[in-house]
Length: 111
Image (tube, rainbow, N blue to C red; front, side, top):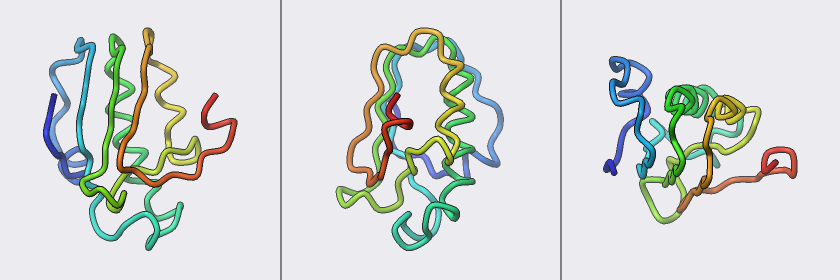
């Protein structure tokens, strides 16, 4: 379990070392304005960077991602176009959850 991580720290930080973890609960703070203010294109690169890091956790069975605030502002954008397709590399995904995050998913995104 982690607390809140700024996206800039994920983008600019060193590679993660604990790649064999099975459960990750973390709040992600997208830098700058909310996804509502920026739009899908603006939050896409930051979401893509985070999903790219998550995709390296091949043994991950449970992933719960939240936004920094209850309103869902400053959260990831859960769409395939925002890089969520990178999670296909997870070998044992049993549970994916997100809380306090605004999203507008299509059926394709959910599948």
